[in-house]
Amino acid sequence: MKSYLTSIIKQFQYYKTLGDKTFKQLTFDELQNEIDENSNSISIITKHLVGNMLSRWTNFLTEDGEKTWRQRDLEFHNTFENKEEVISYWNKGWQCLFEAIEPLENKDLEQIIYIRNQGHTVIEAINRQLAHYSYHVGQIVFLGKLLKGKDWESLSIPKGDSSKYNKDKFSKEKSRRHFTDDV
Image (cartoon, rainbow, N blue to C red; front, side):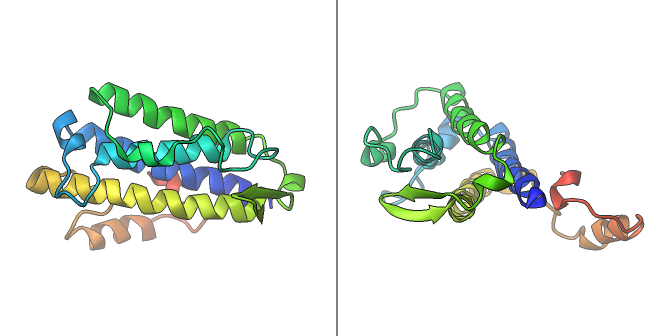
């Protein structure tokens, strides 16, 4: 279980890094761009994601993960005034998450916590949130890539570089390490 806790923290750090690298490539106007009237901008997705993080991870071992103070519907109204505000809010959500999961110990993992009165083990709740956050970070990255077009700097193996990437990986000794260690 110790490896689970280490791995899950690295997984969350990885998805935060993907978002960080996307934000670096975009202007505030690009973060605000709603591709069409039925879609959300990166700013709005960020606001929703952070609203979820603050609700789920604040006192997460002792209070329901859907806080009474959360105003989920308002998360889909854009109120950011500049890029720095978007990034600051993004970091606030991740800080809340890491402050909640970094002190966890093996004995905590089978504890039952609640999200909207539905019981979850801590492991189930963590996995639920990892899936939710990776879904939205994927949206952020995809939108960033669409908005930047040919100017997009790849966050993974660039097209056409798989052989080069694999050659480098296979040139190293076999060892146990997390896939995010090289990111």
